[in-house]
Structure formats: structure tokens, C-alpha cells
Image (cartoon, rainbow, N blue to C red; front, side, top):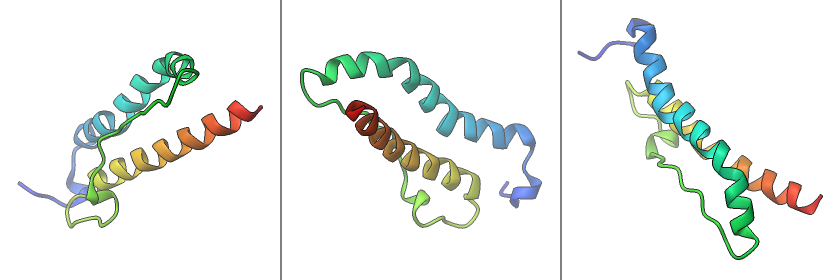
Length: 88
């Protein structure tokens, strides 16, 4: 059954956020030192699974779309951070 966002159970919201935000972030964090070492020998690619929902939020998918938009900003932020820190 599809319900408005204020009808979602807290666990449903947290589950979506955990799957699309927390899991990729917490998985990437411990891998960064390894990726930095590898980057000394050539390019490194970190890929997150995004969605067009992050760009054009469809009806009834606000939480999902927001979580996917987070991943887009996270990947851009990681790229910028690594370039800036590498110059330091």
C-alpha cells in the first residue's frame, strides 16, 4: 500500500536511508586508505548506484530520491576532497 510520507513508519524511513546512504558511506570509509595507495599507480574509481529519482523526484518516492541525491553529492564531495587533500 502506498502512503504519504507522514504515514511511513520510522523503521521504513530508516531502512531506506540505511540501504542507500549509510551502507555505501560506511563501506567506502575504510576503503579510502587502500584506494589512495592504489591511486599512486593509476586512476581509481569509486562507483555508487544512483537513480534518476535523485534528479527528477517522482511522486511517492521522496525518501528514496533524497537518499540517492545524497550519493550523488557524496561522490562529488569525495572527489573534491581527495583532490584538495592530495595538493596539501
